[in-house]
Length: 444
Image (cartoon, rainbow, N blue to C red; front, side, top):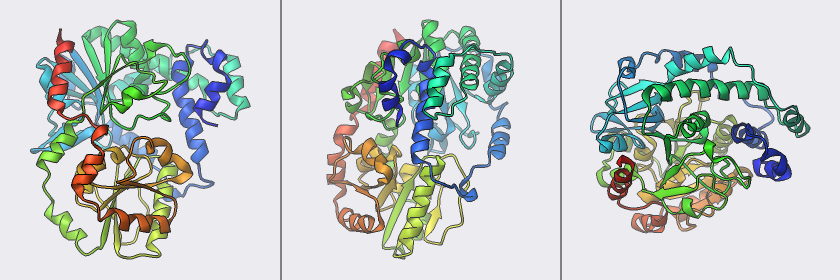
């Protein structure tokens, strides 16, 4: 069962429940992870939550003085979106828009691994402070919840703590209402609306426009953007700034207004990429080099790790480069596996022959940079996400080592210009013109 099956079965009931507008995301992730959970997750693959918490708390006072200013626009992003451009770490989704607005904008940033002291953003603060206030508020929240909904979840073996999730939503709602009433911004920009649904709800209740900047894959199986239910639009962003037109064509999409703008960073990389001599030298002794972009789910990481080790049992002429996202915990690998985070995903894969992933959004962007994809199609996840989006000319779906090896030989001979041409419909060209046109309307 997935979230779409569940909503289909209980449609008339769920559409009457306001809390389902935010609980559905938690249920969806639970069902997704349950469907893909392995029997046992190795301790080597587990994240150290206590260490993560300590790293999070140390950032509370980052940019602290910037809280005490007035702003017309608020941006919500995280430090994993930053890329090194001309000696500064640049938020690839937000910073260009902040600069073009030519007004005071505050970026409230969640530290993925860390905040960058040499960030391009002028006015930036850490969301860690808000997190502490959130925990204090949550102590006093005592929500009433629907017993019938709890029973339905139990009947379907969905182990979600409804009381905890409702406390979190309402505590965040109080926190963000206080924040938005203090700053009274004209518009808020978020890099993931369903991740901050309480913030979106507060903004909509206060009459503040919400704009989401697309950060990853949006397809017919992404429950953050698709539902057959008639959901309350006060829990949804007003506008989605998308990569291209595919997001407009999506059936049953939750965000009704979609404006394609393309990708700032993709166009920047096309114009400015230069090879890193150290990385290039490390790759030169191998026949094939595979860059692997990842998410942070235990089951996804284990699928990838197990596949790599199985492949290397048969072939020693291939180097796999693991590109970490947020997590730093990795098992001990043989020398033909490199864990590399000195460059971002895009810069790293441009040094390689092939891009590999299970369902990272880099699969959309790699062909636009001339790099073909091999997608590890465990439990048909890759095909569900990408088959309707990516051209078979530059993308292969594999489930075993033999198919993977065969796909390498097929793809390495492709011309980069042809790969880029086959991917042109996914990303609007001329980002600069598109975003300026949109912001002219926002400023009015």
